[in-house]
Amino acid sequence: MDESPSLNSPKRIKSLSKERATVSFSDHDDKASGFSVSEEHGAKPSEVYGFVVSISTVIITVIFFIWAYLPEPWLHYVGITYYPSRYWALAVPAYALVTVLLAMAFYFGLNFMATPPSTSLNIMFDEYSREPSSFVPMEGDEQPIEPISDIGINKINDLMFGSAN
Image (cartoon, rainbow, N blue to C red; front, side, top):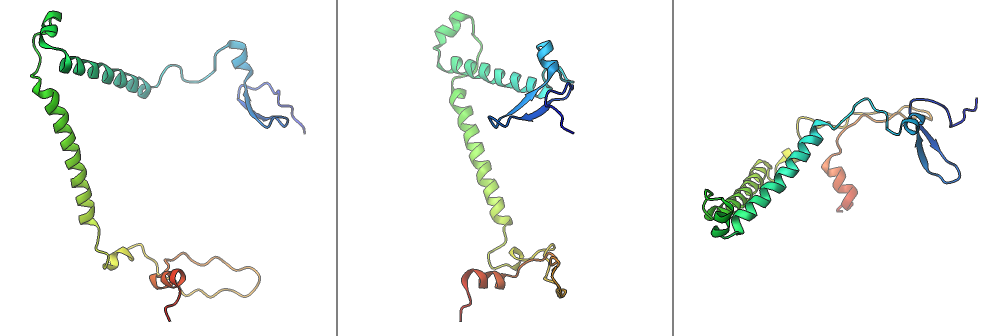
């Protein structure tokens, strides 16, 4: 049963051209109406929120730089008379930077405190560790897969570094 790739169907048909080895998607409804057919129309809420946040960030940054760099007489000429002290133009970014650096240092410190020492057996064994079971393979051509288990550190050291005789 040989079907041609020009099947009239509302679903997109994936056809592989043997001459060029490219994948093309065709939908006859798209070509006739000029618009793609989809169940949802319009932008998703996350796209709208992302657009609004990005535009807001640009506007707030421009306002911050105007406030931080324009002289006071220019701001008064435009009609802006009530604004924070210029001290905060340097203090807020500096405080934010120090807060982020201290939070990172605190996070790294907590991770180092939660890590067991290198001499502890807890770094090799935990409640999910499985000891190898006594597995006796069956006789014959087909061998079943051994049950899953952890490899002991002595076997790993022997495989990686060889026996130290």
